[in-house]
Length: 276
Ligand code: ADP
Ligand code: MG
Image 1: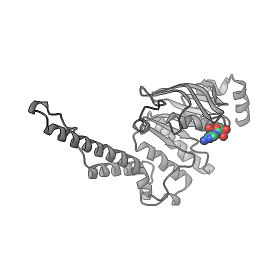
Image 2: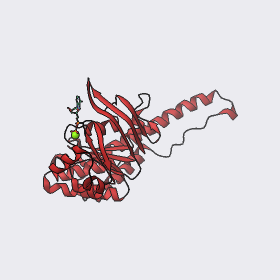
Image 3: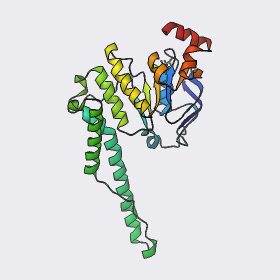
């Protein structure tokens, strides 16, 4: 699904990513470990082009999204992102947070289709009877989109047991609740892959479990996930592969058992001895 080829990223003359190569297949749960400052967040942000890579390719569903000529917005909507600090909109209700992106994008698609049809209709006036261009089929309305997006958002909120929080503002939620809302907000876009950047690092310890539990469920349902985390238990039990990033490079990549029981890279051995 995603092929990262020789990905490089510099800020000024400081090279942060020094040639990353990794393949992420459908259904993979890739855990990314590594010391602070090793480039993990930069890597994730490059994956969905929140940062423009300085070099290399990111082939996502067959298209090189690192190529400046590609309209990244078309592809980015298929990649969800969950951040350490939730990044919910505090001036929107919980339900609005979950509805916002899919409603906006689907309404924009509808607007585009209508505009295309007006253009086609106009051109058709000047075309012969048997040369008329077919209109783009439009099977929905703005109201219909809103209704469906709302129903889906409520279903997702029910899934995480927060349907009664639909109309409150995020500031009234606990950290664990906020992060679970952020996760279903990205699910509402029906993404092909979700990127998680330390999703439990900002949580009080007693709230880590509920977030990991939801992530585990998604993993079992076959969602493709890339998870930067310090949760070794999660990496060990849920990940299909574990990467060790150090100094802007992937120093080790293995299945969880191999990774934790027979680490090869010296820096990884040191890293594991400090945290396990
Ligand atoms: P990690 O997530 O592994 O802790 P980051 O990807 O956040 O690491 O950062 C790696 C390095 O890149 C750090 O030295 C950081 O200071 C630098 N860096 C990250 N973002 C920027 C930026 N926008 N401008 C300049 N330097 C940055
Ligand atoms: Mg980081």
